[in-house]
Image (cartoon, rainbow, N blue to C red; front, side):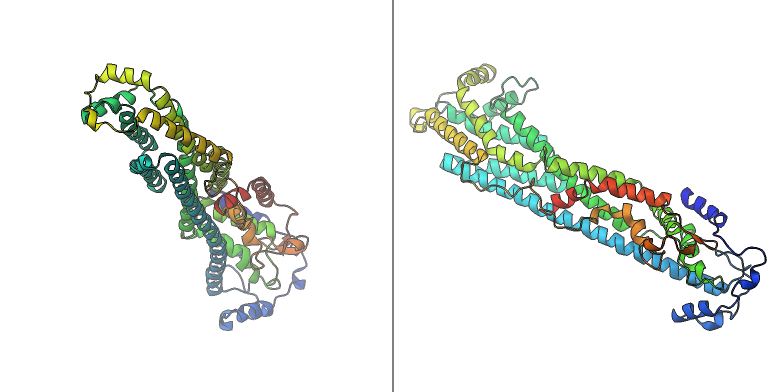
Length: 471
């Protein structure tokens, strides 16, 4: 706001070359051209004087000889405000639409990845375990259900979801290694407490839980943050477009595009482009998106690189079956040591009756199945298996507009590109309206140089979010 106020204070100090002493007779005093232009816009000619009058009554435009009455100045203020708002809303609405489309695209693809990963893991384990897996399917489906819950609402911690998965897996698999014993609920509770102790000395599945936890957590957190970033950007821009224009901004826009119609003899003089950019930046910066928008976009672009790179859920998804199978193999191979620790801490469970034991001998059978699952999982992970791969999150294809996400940072250039707001960039050397009279726009204003620097900075990364969301 301070920048805009400074601009309004400086505007009268920056007039272009006007008529010098003794040239008053050469100035056109008729308001014919102004009457023609405003009459064509629907203004009543009765409100427009046929010749210039004193401008002492004007509140915004220079108080010199003028063709604008108080009523005309007020109506022009409303009209110029309406044009400026429509241009901002049009460009802002396109930005909202772009973010919304990318939000929906990413959401659809990520949900598809989750479903495809669950389906692939089910096929793999069903081939390896058969009925054994079918009896314990709820453990795996429960894990993916909780991953979806976290992605959708972040209402439940990932740590708890993954810890519960491994705990339930241990609760179901440990008894399979010892069919000769009966494991009561209290005994299994002791087993769970021992496996989740702070010392982590038991480690029934080796390092697999830690490795899978690291991959899944950072992939899910990054995906959640990315989808929230797109959603937040969309909502913030949408709400910002509803913020009323400040009075100082209305006056600056009026001085930019309305006041050139008032001095007799220069109604068709276009506003200088540099003047327009200064006004546009002054009006849009207090809206709260600049410079914050640049920081937001930088963060979103950086996050997009991680989502499609080191934090890709695709990579984590492809290793899930392998890590789970490796954990099960570790449990089987180290069952003697593990059982000794458990029996020492929780006691030796009672023996089962001979006719209640399961056949065939579970230790050998389970070990064979787990080894087969590990082989199949490794083949699928290396590309040699036949399991369907999840949709790629790391191989995006750009289909959206290249300038879509530049958004608020490039909005002043978009607004000033409209012929109603400023002279065409190709006419920079031609006379134009400076806010106080006839002049020429600088070849490159500070505002335009700033905008160009931002465009160059964003140009190197501007496709990443669009690519990531529009697979």
